[in-house]
Length: 438
Ligand code: ASP
Image 1 (tube, protein in one colour):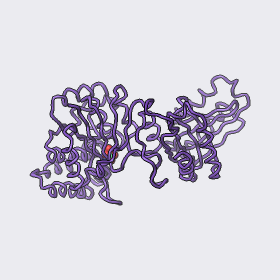
Image 2 (cartoon, rainbow, N blue to C red):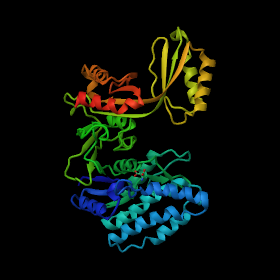
Image 3 (tube, rainbow, N blue to C red):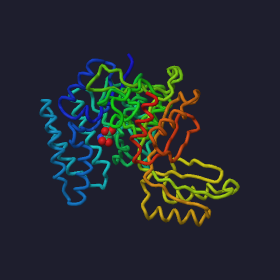
Image 4 (cartoon, helix red, strand yellow):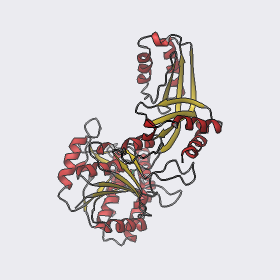
């Protein structure tokens, strides 16, 4: 029998009705044997996610010695779910222990992870599946880096002989047993780890939208749903802000060809989006797969005559960025010019001034200035590499919308074109390009 791993996000675990809907989905297909769950998410606009409440509870405990204010909300949320589902499960001792332990060992990750932990305890009782704690099968090394091969062995060993299991998403453990989480949205990553470990035939990622969209639905009305995309395209789009799936969630699957199927818990018959390793055969003549963009970048522009003759020029500049712990996103160059695009995280006014001074000292540029408030957008698609006209279409659309392009970069794999625009123009730019292609 083939195996499906099904990961359910926060809205799918948000309350009794959603959880019963998940139950139906699991019962409708016995291949859905391994289930990964998120913490309860928002039930309505303006609602709070349990994970956010847990972070606040940790901060409250650290500041005041108690987390009663936030933990009461968390307690209420879980008690209501258990009661409304009519479960014969006394969750109070678990809640009491967590309330007491939050903040005890200065481990914010422990606090954050408890939403998934409790969610999985409840889910295992509702779905009649064994609970397997992620701390036992997902491991990080001493430096806090996810240990892929060790975890894969543990997952395979622990799960392969089970008929099924529920595993909490988002966290694992360090060698000393302490809890460590992935970055936000990391349950998607857990789902991929489990899919790889049990050698699933498909990794279903259940969320609250009909699939991966060609553009942000807050910017473009009713964007087309992408029927399939490649791991690589997913990475490019999610890194640039498309938020359906965690940008790193394909990594555990790189050495496999397990497809990810994005599905909608609240519209389960919709086909959803398939994310596969290789789209070559499915490609047809599709030029662009999707468009995504996000603000929050700064550009350092440098001009120096005969820059091209100065061996070591780049190294000097890059060492300065490294010193300030800034990751370089893009570096388009001309013969005598160079632009360095860095994310605003880690860049304060103070560090910016220091960087300018250091660049002046190291390479003595003729011109040096800083553009703030830059947004990057990515136009992504394998189809671009063997067909002509994509760039022309992109820039015609931007010109027609009267949008000033600050920077252009094309990845060497030719699967994306990156355009830098003023952040205030981002949404208009996405919409203009979307309408040029779809
Ligand atoms: N609950 C965590 C978050 O809100 C992880 C997840 O849902 O994937 O980020």
